[in-house]
Amino acid sequence: MPDDLKDGRIVIVGASLAGLRAAEALREEGFTGSLTVVGDEPHAPYDRPPLSKQVLLGQATAQTTELPMRRDPDAEWRLGVRATGLDLLEKRVLLEDGESLPYDRVLIATGTRARPWPHKEEAALEGVFTLRSREDGAGLADRLAARPERVLVIGGGFTGSEIASACRELGVQVTVTERGPAPLVGALGGTLSKLAAVMQRNHGVDLRTGVTVTALNGNGAFTGARLSDGSRVDADVCVAALGAIRNVEWLAESGLAAGPRGIACDAGCRAFNMYGIVTDDVFVAGDVSRFPHPLFGYQMLSLEHWGNAVEQAEVAAHNMVNPGPLRRPHLAVPVFWSTQFGLNIKSVGVPTYSDHIVIAQGSLEARRLAMVYGYKGRVTAAVTVDMAKSLDYYRHLIESAAPFPPPPGAADRAIAADVTIPSDVPDPSVLSHGPTVALTGHLPDRRLTVV
Amino acid sequence: MRTVVDLTRCQGYAQCVFLAPAVFELHGEEGLLYATAVPDDQEERVRQAAAACPVQAILLGEEVKSGAR
Image: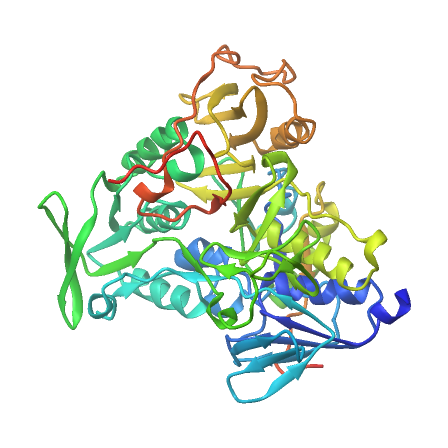
């Protein structure tokens, strides 16, 4: 029987990082059947992180960020074709061109797209961008290279902050608006968000917090924006960095547990249907998935992380071609990075799953530190700023459920290493930028406040 | 040829920056930026950089050719 799983027809829907790595892993796992990868973009799988960094700085072009293959997965690539539905009973992926692809097992890796500026006519103004696709990156890089007077970035999350950083490095004036109290606050909490705000201002960013953009102005081309505090920003380029929307609409009629937070799956990447019954032939990986994690109270996690796409794709691929007892759980601790304003920020664990923090190494003043996050007396996350070599140590603390504040372990331990302060993680609904990590379970001690 | 660095793994040892400075560049103390397309005359240096990376974070290879099978 197990041999049958190595053969048959597998369709992967989604031709980005998770789709490519799953295709490679299926062959590494010994799958010899037919493999088809469907992608709505007309491009070979490409890497997105450079689009907000090297590409904007002109060090790489958006047309050359294709991902290298680890091995040729010997797949049929159906690129530029959108999947429009999934028939679980007939076991077919429906495509927009009317064709349908039969499968024995299917992997959903359709990822996310940029949340557009909500006002359609304003979003259509020339000079208004989002940043997710290769075309977005190429278009924005061209505009930045042409030296605009000022760029307005709406949303102070990681993408918005990286865009602002690139603008300043290019010598372009930039205004960042964020509804929350500081940039990156949704991902990193109050203390590090204050450092992020200082870094932005020190680099010449016109940072406006606690405000929203109420209207984008322009007659054909974008000329500026009105803010909720009554002020105006004159700019000729606008980037809406409002977070991501999960690409689940095509599954609306499928009967799968697919919604705005993603597609719910078990720890083995198997999708749940809308009744909460787990399937055995539909798998999910990458940004579009929502999966339980034992280190974070078995809450369903939605992660927009490069590393998660790779790891989950590999687990999904393994489980697609192996029988039940040989299947593996997806238990990797989330890891994330961002390079901005000359700082390398890395995160392990889930910083928003926290009530207190300590600075365990370095200091805010030195712009070099390791901050450890705890929840109910247990280490749940760590963030390093220019201290990436320490990250593995903290990953180990998270994996072993070490007590918080953490015991001494690092040589250059900060004076404040056992002074805990509240982690000050805001409700994501008050922010302009969507969270890149979303805890989607029930937290009785966190109540939504309407603002 | 294309390259991608697994920046989840990268710890900023910067061996690649010494071996292939035309492709890899440090941004600040330890943030790594790299050219995604490897120029032909840099391939050997980038291979050395990939081999020398202490955390084996550099991946080199060809991209998927559209319609390939």
